[in-house]
Image 1: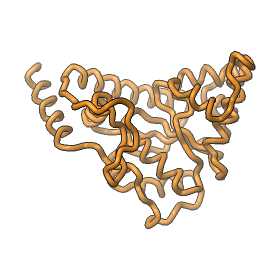
Image 2: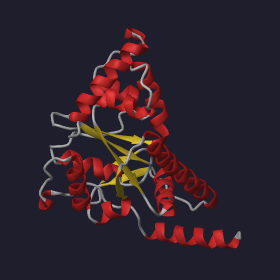
Image 3: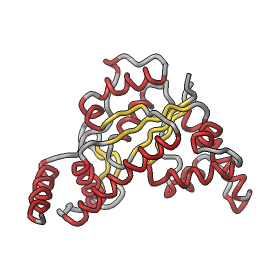
Image 4: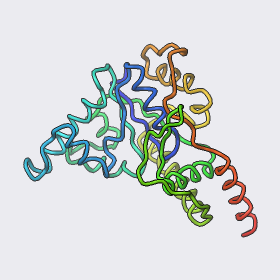
Length: 252
């Protein structure tokens, strides 16, 4: 029996869709990126965790962890949170300070969060993933609801422009982040539950049910699963993919 789960991912793999689906069941916590460095102060303020200047860094980290677990559990039997590869090292440094003497990263996670199911969320087509990421960064629009309304916008609207160099760099970085997850799983002796973007987007209910089965808890009824996030890929995405392949061929 698991106490919770960690969604181990990289950007634009469908993690927001999966988090929303898990939250909507009312059985599997309320996963979010509680240890994304840019948002820690914002989360802490919302949870009324005193600032480090008031209580000291060690007390802040301990209080923040307790609040994150409460938020990620959300009154359900399971704790959940999302962890991007770029934040793993920073979180492990925090856990090492909180729980000194632990010999492995897996031990540190278990000491902090209990028995965990590690869910590796990945996207096979790294070019499509890079295009999705670059379009989001340029346009400012990160997520849209099924009815077409905007769910998350981080900057004013801007028309995205094709950039071969930026896409090539994104592909390389995303490949490296996925390799780093695989290396870490091997080092820690973890066999993760695997979900791909393709299966999640094609059959959200099926992917969710399989994850519940891996957790060993009753799964929701398929008919009750309603995706709350729409795909953003469009004709521009397809055009960029073809241009990128053409540009790559020209450089050979």
